[in-house]
Each structure stands twice: as structure tokens, then as C-alpha cells.
Amino acid sequence: MTAIPAIEVRDLLRTYRVKGTAQNRHPAPVVALDGVSLDVPPGEFFGLLGPNGAGKTTLIKVLVTLLLPTSGSAKVAGLDVVTQAQAVRERISMVSGGEHSGYGLLTVREQLWMFSQFYGLPTGPALARIDELLEVVGLYEERNRRVSALSSGMRQKMNLVRGLLPDPEILFLDEPTVGLDVGAARDIRAYIQNWIRAKPGRTILLTTHYMREAEELCDRVAIIHKGRIVAYDAPAALRTQATGGSYFVLVTEPLDGAAWAAGLPGVQRADTRAVDDRSELRVTLADDGGIAGVVKALADRNRRIFSLQKIEPSLEDVFVQIVGRRLEEADEAGRS
Image (cartoon, rainbow, N blue to C red; front, side, top):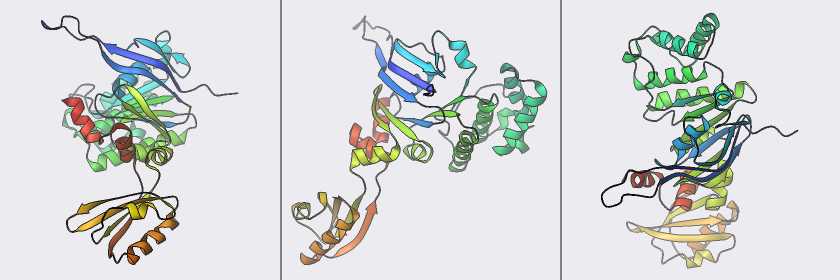
């Protein structure tokens, strides 16, 4: 029997009306999601990657029933997000980066207890679970501290505890480490990895524009750009498909182009660029053994090699290959 997908999205469209101006009284609506389709099976750590404004947060808001889709369909735990919204909410939780939920005058423990009552948890078990989770994320010693006095990293750890209190079946994490220092981000990543492994069937959908975070955490990822899914697979498979796998970079004495290298056995691609008074030769090979032929050919051409490095492609390389610019550049374009 095939398991019901934790998340199932079909041809999802979400548009926003734009206020008219004197010059344009009826502007076209903004398309935030443009025919998005994807499946996430139970137990998977799934990543949704893309620059600011790509549609990541809009998709999560539809899935957690905060926004209605314009058209298409979305199911969470087999339940329709429009017609079965309350049942969806009982099975999920959401944590967003940089959120400031609750009341600053309350202590950490008081605030979390308040949310436990919203979830309908009995007080005794709720307080025990709060203390347990605070211990795990390193906030137990701060439990009686006012929320207003917490650092951004501490506040985000508290928000993560709040999201985990009801022990959701499916956890949505929207940029959970944005703006955090390296240590706090590492702590949060470590805990959510342990959380999903501890109980079969738990599912996480993570949105992020930190490519390394997605590579570290996710079983599969989808890259979203301008409201569309443009790539969708395991990180390793995406790297191979988009970039051709690993490659070698050799810094040598000046070279006159790379046509000679392109014809060597096992070389799939070769190009050079000038770096000060040297050349940087980049070669993609059918297998790593082909590098010996490249080194020999350079020796035959009396070109000294200053360095040789094997480069493993990253999701950032995949993004550049598909979108045509680096993620930071896409972010800037989205803000302009």
C-alpha cells in the first residue's frame, strides 16, 4: 500500500492584486506561485530554495492554511488545505525566522506555557515537555528570563520549542536561521535533524536561501525561481545533472587557450582565464583518472603547474547554472 504523501501540491497558482495608479488603473496581478507541483513523502526532510521574492513563504502560507490558493490544489497529510483547514492545523506546526510572537513581559517558560494552552495540552505534561525541550536547545537556564531580554538567537530557539510543543506530524520551517550567529544556527540545525530522526514519519519542509544549510539537512530539494519550480531532486543528483559533476582547477604558467586540452582523452570540457600573470585551467573529466593526461600534456607543453585542486560542485553552482546568476545577485534583483 502506497503511503499518503505528507505534502501534495498540484498546479498551484497564487496571485495578488496590485493597487492601480493614475497611469495604470488596472494593473496585472502579481504572480507569486505559477503552477507549482511537488510531492513530499512522510519522513522526508525537504528543502525549498530560492532568492527573496521567489515564492517560498507564499507556498508555506498556503500549506499551513494562512493563504488561499488562487487555483490548483494542495494537501497536507492527505487533507485539503481549503476544505479541511482545521484538520490540517491539528497536524502541523510552523516556525518562521525572525518572528516576534507572544509578550515580552512574560518569561520564557510562561510564554511557552501560554502556547501550550492554545494547543490544548494539559498543564502538567506541557510544563514537563517545555523543560525538556528547553534543556535540549540550551535555554533551560534562561527559562525564568523575560522574553524581551532574550537575544535574537535565544528568541529563535524559544520559537523552535514553541513549534515543537504539540509534537507535530509535519513541521514547516520558514528561514529558521535567518539573521542568527553561526553558533545559534548550528544548534538549531542539529536539533531539528535529531527531531526528525527520532520518530519515523515526521516530515519537515524547510525554506531557506542558504544553500549550504539545505545541502547539510535535506534529503531532496526544489529550487523555486519567480514562482516556478525550476529544479527538483536530491542535492547530489542536482549537482551532477546541472554541473556535470566534479572538476579540476589548475593554476599554471600562461596558456594560449584550452583547445588543446579539450581534445585529450576523458576531458569533457576545458576553459581558461587569466589570473594576474598566470592561467587558471578548469577541466571537467569523465572520471578522475583523466587528470593524469592533463598534467602530462602541460608538462609536454613546458608549462609549470603551481596548484591543482579538485572542486566538488555545490547547490550554489546548480543555482547559477539554472538561473544564470548567483543567489545574492538574485536577492538584490528581487529587492530592486
